[in-house]
Amino acid sequence: MKDMKEINTIKFRQNLLIVAIGIVLFAALMNLKTVWGAVAIVLGLFTPLVFGGVIAFILNVPMSFFEKNFERLNEKHPTKFLSKGKRVISYFIVLILFLLVISFVLSVLAPNMRDAFKSIYITLMESIPGWLAWFDAKGFDMDQIYGFLDKINYDSIADFIKADGGYIIGIAKNSLGGVFGVVGNIGIGFIFSIYILFSKEKLGRQARMITYSYLKKEWADKICGVASLTYRTFAKFLSGQCLEAAILGALFFVVLFVARFPYAGAISLVIGTMALIPIIGAFIGFFFGALLLLTVSLRHVVIFIIIFVVLQQIEGHLIYPKVVGGSVGLPALWTLLAVIVGGKVNGIFGIIVFIPLFSVLYTLLKQNVSKRLASKGEKIR
Image (tube, rainbow, N blue to C red; front, side, top):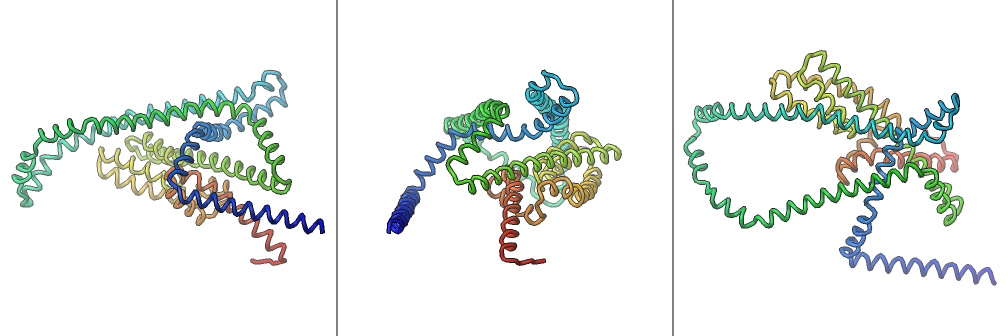
């Protein structure tokens, strides 16, 4: 009788909780705009912390590599300095390497971009008389075009700009404020990332303590397992993507340098850098390369297109499946789906995040399916 009463009490509490959740959800749906605004404010407060977590995760991958090597070195040649300072040394090595890469990219790209746009401008200015002559030879009435240009009232345009100058300046100020806000969040996030990186074991232990204290051991084990799988997958994807981008950039540089192409270094660097964006990144680099070579000759552009197609086939069928595909263990169909969904959700950032995220989901689904089939005694080939 007592057990039955306890069961009824538990059921009543569960039903009461379901009703309360339903009421809250209904109220949220009826005031969706207000709720979304409140959520946006809360997320805005935690934005620097999110940036810090992302920066810490990215820097932690190469930092872990250096720390492990310093640990091996310390095992062979034990020193107090290396034992205590391996993390600090690793952090500064990664930071210096990152700054060197950024400065190298800017020093190579900036001069080439300036020369390219200057060449495009000169080419356009020199081509305008020829274009006008061609239109005139084809029977177009150029007098009407010149008459249309003469009828444009530049004074009214100036008055319009003056009248709406405050509005335009307001838009510019808001845009500039948004840029400074992002830069500020990244700066604060960078400071957060330092604390996270130097206290990662302590933070991990605290997270496990909270998980196991509030949840049953079975659920806590599952959550910790998923978190560990997620970290390994994202870390492997990041390292694999960087390695694949470096290989692709080097491959383009060798081919373009041997073929004596102008801007070989800049084009290879952009293609390699953009290759960090899965699937579509190399094509962004291709358009940049074609634009640079267009200032030289159309023949260079045609040959570059052929080289790009050939190297993309090599990259798509040999390099990417071995380096990145093998690291995340995601089939080609799921990779394509992750790119489409990620691009729709949040553009380039979504593409980068959704490939390892889909890999985690794919692995969990595969494990769950295998477990269910094993419990049923089914073996499907």
